[in-house]
Length: 309
Image 1 (cartoon, rainbow, N blue to C red):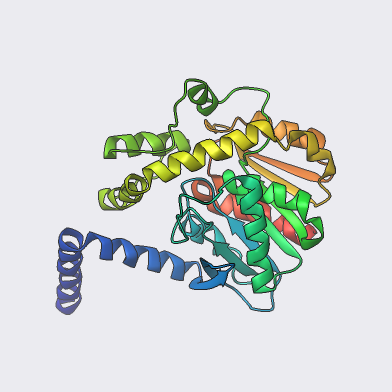
Image 2: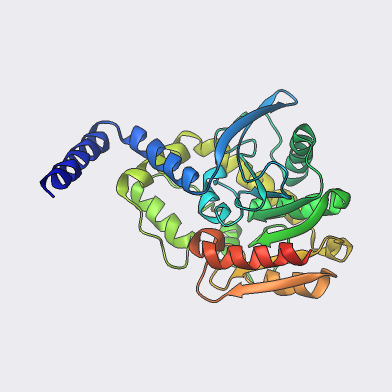
């Protein structure tokens, strides 16, 4: 027992030293552990001169499930969700250009159409066919556009609080946009807490050093993120996919959080009425990112849908 106590004390001392002297190392360690728990490893591939970092896990010969992050997110949004898939499916989780560890070139076009074509080239490079494609928010916008552009490549489509569809009720984000504001980029720790409350219905507690690490990335790329936000918004407003929903031929699962303050839940009703082959799941106690707020419940619906298709 004494040996165990001394071992625990030693680990606590090591943790404290890393926490105070090397917070970035601690963040990387935690991210690595979460990825390992999700049975995911990091890889990269060069596509048209751009290096794409991505996570992959599961049997190499399994059916392919691709998960695409939203605005301001990256591949690390998915491991807690992906862990429910990697025992059976080959899971691919990329960083889109403009986010995560991918290129952040201010001269690139980061609109949904451009990102759709880049994602298609990424799939081609990896030789991916018969894909179960999922996307959250901006990633859902890109996934929906992909299904309309390359339906022959997909077996199923899962949209999680996706952008690109016109709601019947204005969200808080839309009201802020009408006032010329972008509330999705933080500039202080207090601002970052506000952002987390805005995105999640019930904020998941996070240690200060993790929030500081995420905030540092936002501050570093603030101008680029703001430019991407308005670029995507302009495209979504002038080239909404709402009128094309009847053309979606891929079996589609729509997952939404009832308390989404960014994209109103009425979008799910619009898609339910327009997409020919769809299933709708509304979580009464979730916000904009159900795959993080309710990973197990969301994943079980997703897995059941994949099995049916």
